[in-house]
Length: 146
Image (cartoon, rainbow, N blue to C red; front, side, top):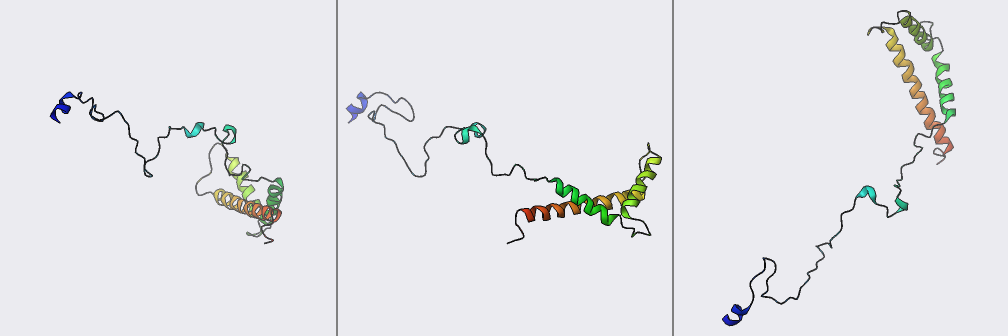
């Protein structure tokens, strides 16, 4: 046995040696994956001809001029009723715009009533437009019939 050890060639490296025959054994397991090449996810052109597809609806806003027109009229009509000391919200807002434009280069003061009318009028407008969008699109897409 010592004679056979002396007649073999030297060890080539840690993983291989010339002591064993040149037969290579491949181990496989369910826990070890096969080698996979790294792929750039931005350059995958395997599906859909290289175009990126998603399920997000492109026209998510579903803008409709009917909603904008009817929403504006639907807010101007009730905001023009004179309920605040004989004045309407629209009238007070437009009058405050005129008062602030009278001294144009200087901005409105923090305590100016312009800010109250501006925020109240626009908040009412945006709420009306939001509910108008929900109602109009809900009716056209049969959300309320179910």
